[in-house]
Length: 380
Image (cartoon, rainbow, N blue to C red; front, side, top):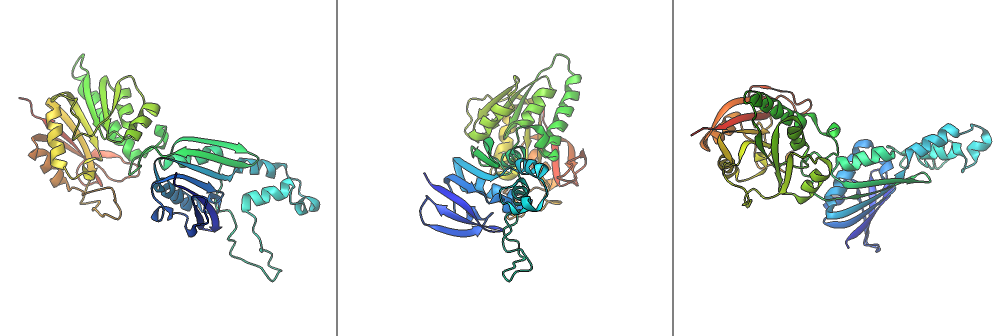
């Protein structure tokens, strides 16, 4: 198995040891994946605490990128909860400060790091504080950070002031929102599904005894499908090409009204035309090169009168830049996306927008950073 160990080198740099050999090199903590890829195991040995919070986030995301699917990260950091308990127990006396094993000395080191050569009265005084800690971790925070960047099956244990985390990579994150609960999903992502649920709820109120068949294509980890199923009298078919994402959805966003399928829409054969009343496709079309083919397929899968609810970045207000959007193929102006839907047989019945990607508030119009359109397949 391709294995590497990462150790602290100096402040923002780490030393990488490959396959337990003498082969090693030093790099920035968030540039590991530039030299290492498709790794089966990464052991991160007590270096995260030397990074700032944002550096640590970037580092964890980079380590996720460096692993192959099925790879494992093992990570060790000081347990800050344990350090705080030492601090609270400490007795502040001269003898305690001079005793390197006392609660007072141990808690100071646990909070600020060893900090050697920092006595300004000595000749070897070094004011760079390279060995100072810049971030801290508890079991809950470490688990949250690892899941946030895409790790799954995260297990964190504490022993004698040290946290040990084991986490797996089961999917390529890309731009997916990954969290075991809705609380940690970005509001702009949640708002699209909540908007769809509210719109369809109003539609259902006009039809007595109606049950909708909904397709959520590129459903990711399934939080949006769960919102739809939990809000509506509907059967939701949730499809994604990534088996890791589907497995995650089945574990954390299972619902009796949802059927999760790992399928590639281009080869998905076990589905009949005119099977769905509604297709939801959020932030999907900008990732593919076969946009018109996909919309034509949506048209085939919808029943006459069926609805397509689609969102995508607005090129006018969020211009496409491959560096900023490495997983995108292109962005669409409002005119382009409306024209594309129309060319595939849809009637665009309304346009909405999200003005920003923070709050993600949805309102009618076409001058936001995200476009959200309602298209209808004309009835025969």
